[in-house]
Amino acid sequence: MKILIPFLLSLIAMLQYRLWEGDGSIKEIKAYQLQLDELKKIAEEKKQRNDALRAEIVDLKEGQESLEEHAREDMGMIREGETFIQVIQ
Image 1 (cartoon, helix red, strand yellow):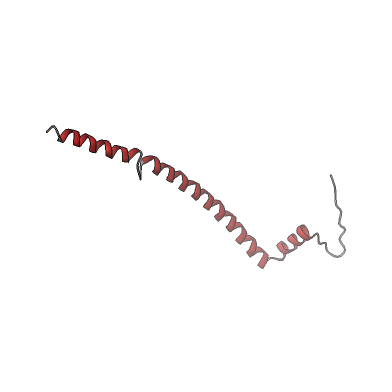
Image 2 (image 1 turned 120 degrees about the vertical axis):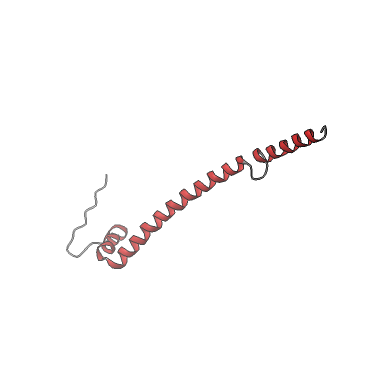
């Protein structure tokens, strides 16, 4: 009996240490959960960005208006008979 009690106490102490500080501890699991949440947030932002780019690609392939808008904004193109006025502030 004298040997059993210290053995059980040391076993409990060892298991408690692993629970709070060792491999797979509660602290480590919380850190992994925070990291996972951050990665999910980044993935969601990238998914939204990809969806917007896909929509823009479809619009460019199908619509002439979008293509014209890009040509005007990015390349400074104007139609025949139009007058280009640049306002500098």
